[in-house]
Length: 335
Image (cartoon, rainbow, N blue to C red; front, side, top):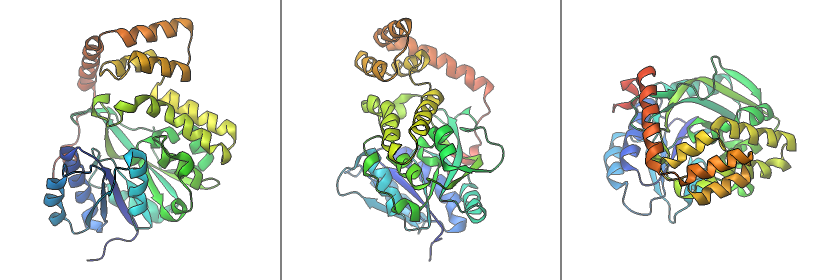
């Protein structure tokens, strides 16, 4: 059976088999009517995900698994996933994301009508357990838009740090050397921004993906938090050979503002899971300096027992749960 040559879905995987299973089931449900292929690039270096593959491959003939011969790490495995997909466009996805049932159909329709080299897919932020929506739309879009790549880079590219937002035309992607952007944790963003210089971007307003982001404990990068939080700056500095320096600075500031990096609220959020340590505090204060009072409070947070902030966060999440819409069970249940 021939797969759809227009769009493929690529998922870099590591060691979260339960999340991977649920993610792939949601993708199969959306991809099967259009025979869109799905590529899983396994970086686990063991059999952590073997049972998931054995269960799901017979269910969908266009599900392909490739185990990496060596551990590539997050950055390189994301790039490898996109490189592996042979279709005209590739849609990246995280192994713990969920796709809405009409996601593939919506993206194929957008590609047909707006065949730009990069399509941004809006997404919803949800809690760890997929019980409620934290933020309905990452970007407050209501209509499909096209905008110059540089404008997107300056103002909105921060939202594509989440790989599920990225649909990429392979012809332009293949033409860009990723080396300058490696080890930033945002190599895919650097490569995409490089490839769309002077071109237009398509922005899809409807959230098609659920992004689990309730707390840092669910992420695989927490052991290297400093490099993650400073990686956007390194990536945009590498792009200064492609875009004007003021555009790169605007992108850095928009990323910092959108994620609240450097704010006391941000530090308290990280401290709840022991991510914000005194050592990380010193490193982040160098990158994101503040007033003397801000610095003192940041250091106080770094030395405060995490249990206090964990309790405050639990209270905040409970309040959000009361006023947030519940998730559509069709999106998070198995087909």
